[in-house]
Image 1: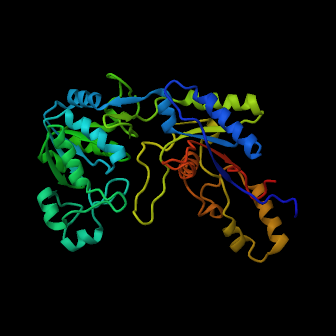
Image 2 (image 1 turned 45 degrees about the horizontal axis):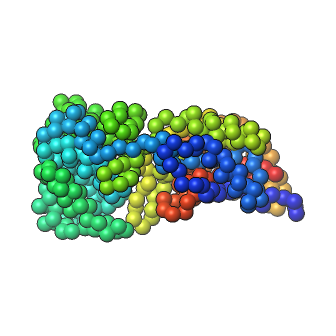
Image 3 (image 1 turned 90 degrees about the vertical axis):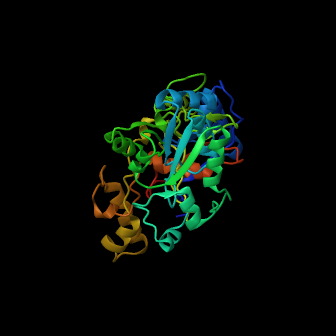
Length: 397
């Protein structure tokens, strides 16, 4: 018992140099991880996971765009007159700079916000406020005047920003006229314009389908800057996943980076003799219990990963086994029975009761969430995360 392994999964934030455009990111990541191992006294194992935040990948790629580029593309695709901009998230970092560029490409913006919150949970209102006002969020369309009459000023719980006022002023500062409405069904925008930029992330395909079936000209955020104008682009995701870089530029989501993860895997194998898995990660998926905010502002958690991270967990629920199949056992007898069941499990536990309650998500989404929480989004300086023991189980020595 004294030699028994006592530690399961370990997640380590790895400090790295500040990444600049053109840096050899694969070499920097490998060197940083190996230097950390030497300094901290840990060893590598097969199937360790090295995760790199999407931010430094895009930085190394130099994948930035100016708001003038956004304006040019929006104007070319939507005509430059009155444009409906619907269902953006409420974020100074994620959307505000994009909105400046969008407004520069139009004479008038009809901004349609969802309520009581945006797609990722940033709240304008509470359901209690809506209920008390007698508003039906599934059908009612509110003008800005009606919104203010019913609800007044509402500031974000954590940022203190009144996003309705903030977005409105931001649009007007570009010289565009602004009209703000609140609605939760896409067709509402067609009473104002048939030129629409839909800014939702995970529901965008449905929104486009609905509006196009009504004859509208519709583009999504994922269809703006899919080709370079004067700077960066993202062929697959356009403006989705972008972040504020400066007051006039955004850092776009990384372009194709599959070669990067396999390059890191190969360099680690050569240097350590271990075959690790590698992924690029963005926003994880977890809900704040106080602010009700999901992350998930990126179009995907992981835009690139090695093939060993494909799939979902294949795990037994230890609590289920202990409380049901082996309820009459205890101590070493219980331990031996559970170890035996784990060793005997087949490659696909789909639908089996003894896997009930295990997390039904993809490996890249689970590990990406772990890494996002580990690295944070502030000044930790750990844009690389090393996860060890993730694929071990109760029987692993």
